[in-house]
Image (tube, rainbow, N blue to C red; front, side, top):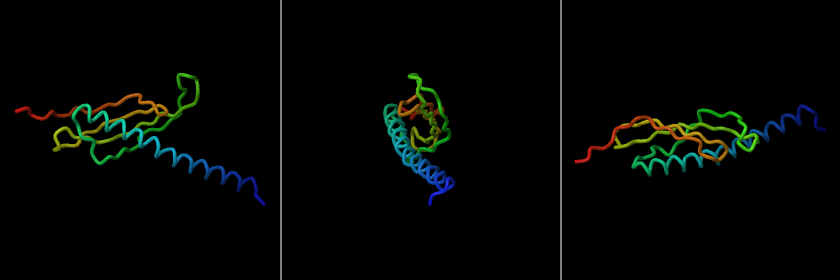
Length: 108
């Protein structure tokens, strides 16, 4: 029979599996948004990687529970140096994108 401990462990394992699955969905959304932003500015997103650097619960404008996720990524302007960028999602909505100051290519 199931004891309360076994049931708790099963619920915890299910919650972790759901979090892991949902993380991929949000990470893909963040990568797509960063790629589009970099393309608009003539920059190149490097390594197609997004690293989560923050995750916390918030209250959305509608008053519902949502999660704010912060991701860090790297980009290049001329291909010789890596720069850092930060993207913040609230739920699936883009809250902000910040880019480190970068050098522009010489226009000869």
